[in-house]
Length: 220
Image (cartoon, rainbow, N blue to C red; front, side, top):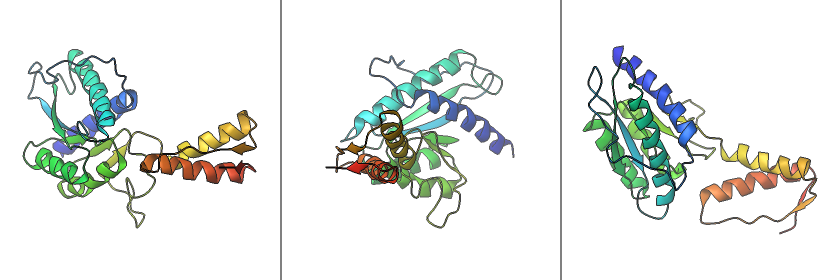
């Protein structure tokens, strides 16, 4: 029971951290050592499974940069749970789902993290979910926006150990369409989307659906 309470407390703290730092800027400064041995107890290990190389490295690198800045601030303020520090263990999933799965396995079964943040992209995050469920270790993403098969499985069951702190594609796409129709009074629109990006395609699909439902026309 004590372990579950520790995991819950850290998950709540890191969930807030990810809300505040999910879109870290390029000018952020990161300390070389996110872990510290100060405090009244053993450091609490958390995993950081991000795209630090490969085609979507910018997403993972920015997420990790913001995450480390926030954890540095938490540790500098005295840590959590009566002075325990948070130690980040980083893994590069190379923007690849198989690598993300392997990184999750190492973090959860060898590094003994109490939870893990990342990956940044929906596809890579989806790949670590079976590992999280099997080991009962929470995973949190600040940018896994895909509507399907993330926090709820294909049968509609809520995944107890899977969390995200971002809006879904359907919500984001609908908000853009509502803004275009209601605030800009737009009657027609052209959609520019990157067909190589699941995120872009998700936004485009949901923008089109909502915009047309509000009486708008997609002309190209």
